[in-house]
Image (tube, rainbow, N blue to C red; front, side, top):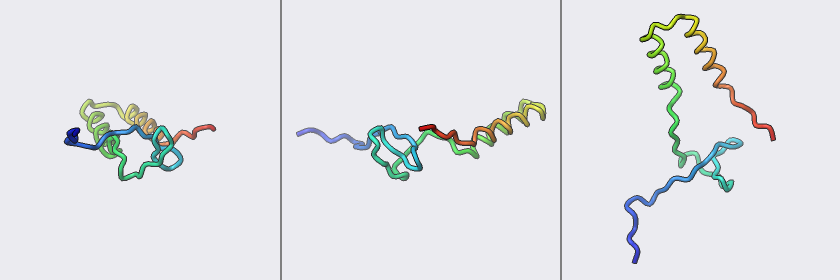
Length: 80
């Protein structure tokens, strides 16, 4: 008889495609079962603001970072 592992859960790579999470085989995975290593946007925004203020970065550079962040929020449409 084979011993059962302490944690029977595993991780399968998924990607976000056409509004749903899918495995490489194309199987849809419910959103509530997906775990990512992404940091919430508010945490990233707060960290950037703290770094920029601590190092006394000029307003020109801060404005450039703000514009850069706005550009990053635009999703890239895949051509198919």
